[in-house]
Amino acid sequence: MAKQKRKSKKKRRISILVILAIPLLIIGLYTVLYYEYPYKLSSIVQTDVPEEYMPIYKAAEKEYGVPWYLLAAHHKVETRFSTMRTMISPVGAEGHMQFMPCTWVGWSHPSCSGLGEGDIPEEDKVNPDVIAKYGGYGVDANGDGKADPFDIEDAIFSAANFLAHNGAADGEIEKAVLTYNQSDEYVEDVMYYADLFLEKEEEDDKTSM
Picture 1 (tube, rainbow, N blue to C red):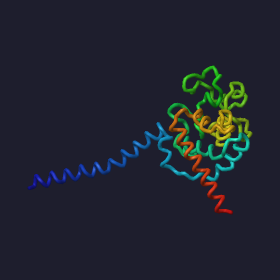
Picture 2: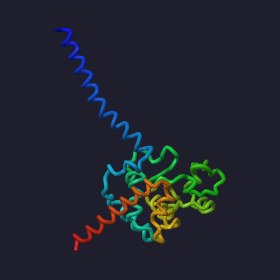
Picture 3: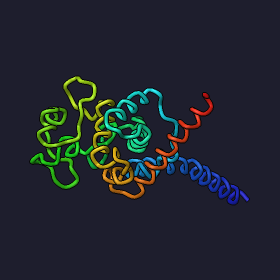
Picture 4: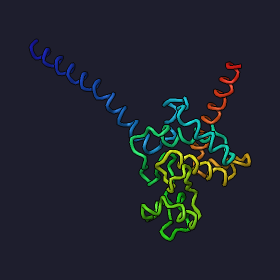
């Protein structure tokens, strides 16, 4: 009888450990998947557009002709509206809108090849003259003399610049999104949120009339 009780206690302890371990496994799995494949899991985070970014999206839309809701969708999918723990991805994409350094500075930079991480000095990455020389998409949106992917205005205007030059300003939205990140799943995710944000704005306009 005493032996049976000891077995029962042991089973209960194992069960408790298993129950406690499950949430930790789920959190760990989510973290790994999110940083490897953020666009696949973006549907489980917030869907509202933070108000503080709206003036920047709208200003970039006016400058480049790229819909504000498309910029917001990219921002959400890329860095969860700049709430990610790190703004540098495992493959080297940087900043609020996750530009590869060679896309930001320009692929004609002598160090650029492969995925586009390059070997570009930090001071050159934010130098508008260097970016102009190598044909990059980085923009100094706030006029501080730097085109910085870690500056929110520069990052969003640069994303608008990229998307506009790849068809978004001419209505070729999906083509532009696919050029931004060559993944069909990424395109689906961005387009889902772009449509969602536009629908929400239209609904808000109706209720305010």
